[in-house]
Length: 327
View 1 (spheres, rainbow, N blue to C red):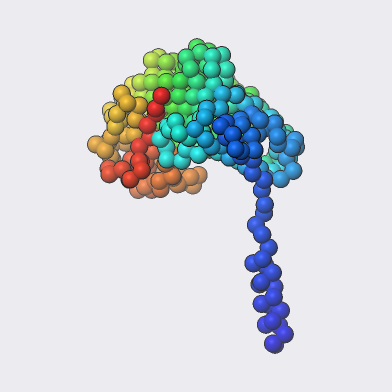
View 2: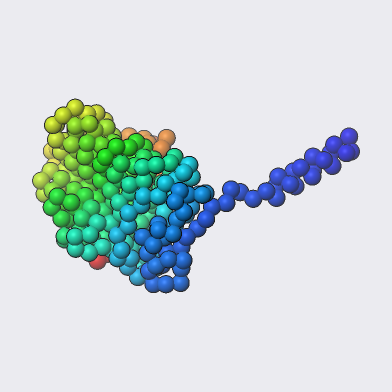
């Protein structure tokens, strides 16, 4: 009996001593002092195919001006890419992928290997003639969340959250988009879009080409688009599922969600947090089976799930429940 007890204790000690599954971290700081000076260089440094789980951690106040294409074979492992802007506020003191004329931001084309990819908390900025911000093209099992995207306004290319080509398991949620050509573009493809805030697009806030499309849109908040907040090109057969997408114009596909009065804290100052007076005026569908926090990391209220990237609080927390774009 004594020996059995001793053996049990030894086994417990050994179990506690076994480390968690390790992953490899590659750091990025365009200002130096890290493993790489650009996200593109970090992607190029990955083994292809991956030989384990990898994390690319981006930080620093110096802009990263190099566009990146991610086409690594995940080989059954996970790839986690993240920035250091975690408060939901566009902050020039944090990592920012800022590309120039005729250049796109991030293109994901990983078509081989299982495993997941997550892009989290990146600030992605263009200029008037920049191409797309984040394109998921012919890839599967990729999630983009809690990102801040602005100034991709090139006609025909300036898509903020863009799905194209074959693939499944692609999701954008809790992202804030401002001043892009199109906020959502699901182009004859599969894409899931939950709780994104999309403001002042120069074309459509959300555009879907229905042919061969499988699109799901829930709890998105769209305002101020030049052409229309929501539009579906009905050319061809496809499947579109929507729920509680609120638009400032009359184009929402969901009952009771069109022509919504949407007031931000300071739209002129590019602060697109919902004004406190908006509390309990727009109720989305509960998506807690997929995620439970907002762009700031604040826990969402299950009893009143707000549309858009941020869960409104009447009294914002210290440090900011608001998110503010700054030039």
